[in-house]
Image 1 (tube, rainbow, N blue to C red):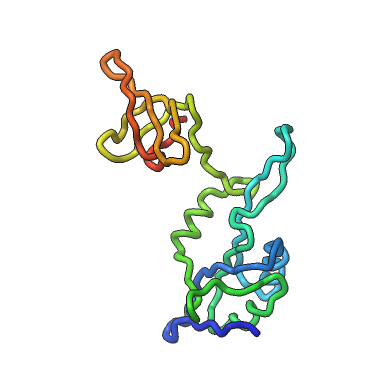
Image 2: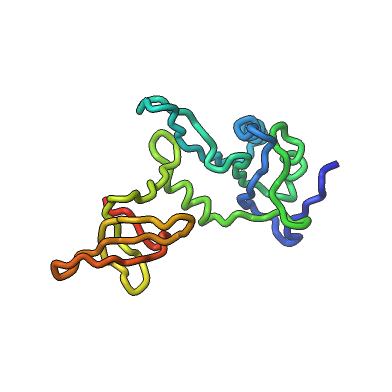
Length: 176
């Protein structure tokens, strides 16, 4: 039996919702939702196979999920019973709206081939910039990563002397 999901009683608008699909049924769910004229967004990335540079396949950015834009009150029944769909993501008995800005950010990373571009994480030896904190805008060489920690060592050259700066990994960005 499917769980009863409610929206906001006062809300008759269209919103984005995350759709939980059955295992490996994202594409099936998307195709079937489109048959109901439901707008969907199924972000995918390239997954490289082996060592060959040209060998890749599509892989979901969020395995087991896709996004759909619809009026919850008008379309919930059709969506809930669509082949490939497990349910609309919800907390308690309230469907969870995905903010339009979140969808826009993901869509802004779409390349011409309709795959999402992921930022590559900096690796040891890369030139990086510290993006916030007391060392914001400093650049240096990513030299060491602590095992099991989210902190790294950056070698920063100032006044002909190389300083070691230890920072959170989350506040660095690779310099192109």
